[in-house]
Image 1: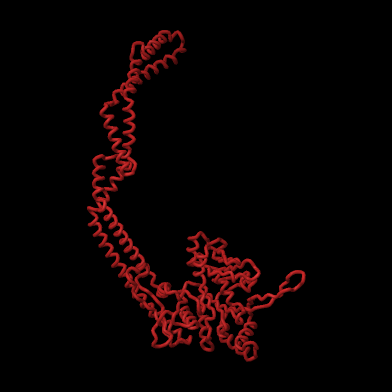
Image 2 (image 1 turned 180 degrees about the vertical axis):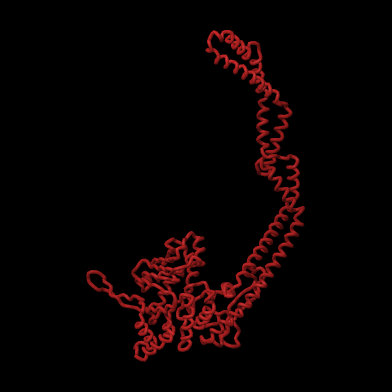
Length: 567
């Protein structure tokens, strides 16, 4: 629900703050008073088109802020969450700022946003209906959504959406396999040669590192053997390290008792050195025996290493990735060999998925046709009282071409009207006049009131060109709409104005403007909006009935209208 509207420096409005209540709010005033400025201002806050002419003369910037009270379940909440805007506290502020060059900035809850997002949010909050506007209900692309919401068959819609997803997924899987097979067949000869080459080499992950290390070791074989033999010679020769360590240990052992334990630690260290020396000799002998320094082995290692690297360069991969490359190429060859069978299976699955979608869509279409009959009947009932009894309203359902089938089925939905008997029905915005279109719109909104998700509706002179009983019927239907929606109405009809639960009068006033030390220098014309109490409402409705000079008869008629409206 719209709770307030703050307007600053828009056309003839200098500063205006309006607080709104639920139910039916009417705005009246003489022609040219500035009622359209209010609607333009609200449209700006909703993300509508901005123009430099909206900025009040003599100022640099205009701004409009619309405040809403929304439940946590409102459809706008997840949309805002997608853009990182928190609206869970129930308050929503939409602000638009416009400079005199015509450039604007948009804000939601004081967070800068694109005008496109502001417009998306605005469409979920307010619906504005005028005589010649491209209203939401006149957009044929939305007729399907409107009918589906009225029909209340969400489970069928979910089933169609799910079956459509399965069908399209199978179709995409089949297309991908066809492309895979086509590529594989085109490259089959190359693939077979490459796989055969890889099979002969049988590369293993980590093999390059092992071969490189082995090659480096074998290339230094002679130097290693010479060094190890020299070391063994030093350890084994007469008077070598081991023999000399043992001799030193024996000499100290003979005199150890005379030293009274002072040599025990030294003797222990010598014993450990003798053992470590013996172990080092054994290890060196084992290493020497393990080395395979056959020149043929070096040649073999180098040949395989170079072959692996050459093949990796050929395929522009790392040596360690050759085994994965072989697996991929083998898979592609398998697609050629087994692809036909797999493709046949996928074709069958796609056909079955399409049948399921068509079955679900056919059932949904039947639901839509039933809902369309109910909608047409309900709208026709409303048209008679709105002086459109000779008009007909038809919900046309036709089947789309297969390439246009969607997640919501294969139906095209269009709202058509014929204003005279015997004439063919056509799109409402092509057939109806401005006044007729507004009344068609009102009839639709009354029928759709319970299923519509837009909480605030604005009607701009929906009663234009009608009076008497028809105007009373318009007022009665607006009052019915206001039982489940917040309704704002700009009207010249006293019958409609009398129905309002809140009444505002829009007027122009001349105000003196101080232009410096010389005193009052200029006059400016500003639009003002004032709430009316019961006595002021009676006077305003009497003015609407009588014109410039309000008579007692007009006041009595105004009393009668207000009394009937309150019944």
